[in-house]
Length: 70
Image (cartoon, rainbow, N blue to C red; front, side):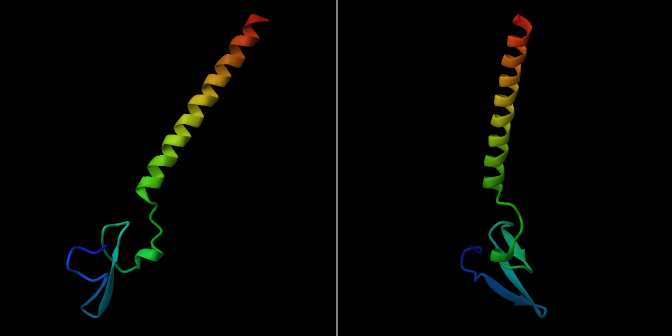
């Protein structure tokens, strides 16, 4: 939400500004039109990608270890 005691929209010098909850600042675009990735979602995606990479590396190491035994 906009800073306490403020509306989501305000005008200044003939321009309309909207409070963007993702940027946490006044912007020209509306919060609903913002294309900035949600930082929380982005962090979760990075953690999932990291876990996937670790799993792939572990499976590759097991596979290579089995190949060296034969």
